[in-house]
Length: 100
Image 1 (cartoon, rainbow, N blue to C red):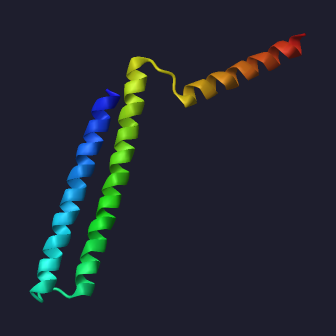
Image 2 (image 1 turned 120 degrees about the vertical axis):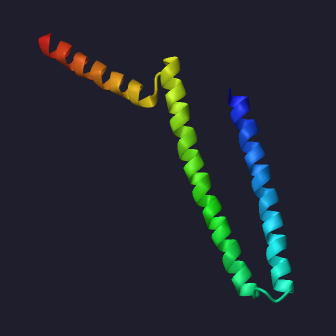
Image 3 (image 1 turned 90 degrees about the horizontal axis):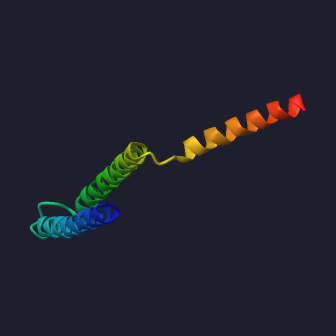
C-alpha cells in the first residue's frame, strides 16, 4: 500500500513539474507577444505557485486522515491511543499505591 501512495505522489509531482514548465513557457510567449508585461507574468506565476502550495497542504491533510482511518480499520494503535493507555496505567498505579 505504501508503494502505491509513493507512486501516486511521484506521478502527481511529475505532472506538477511538467505543468509548471508548460505554464511558464506559455507566459513567456505572452510576454514575447507583448500581451503581458514581465511583472504581470511573474504575478500570474506567483499565484499559480501559491495555489499549488495550498493544494499540496490540502492533499497532505487528506493523506494523513486516510492513513489514520486505515490504521484504525486495521486495528493499529495510534499515538493518542497509547498516550491514553499510559495515562490510565499511571492513574491505576497511583490508586494501587494509595491502597498500600
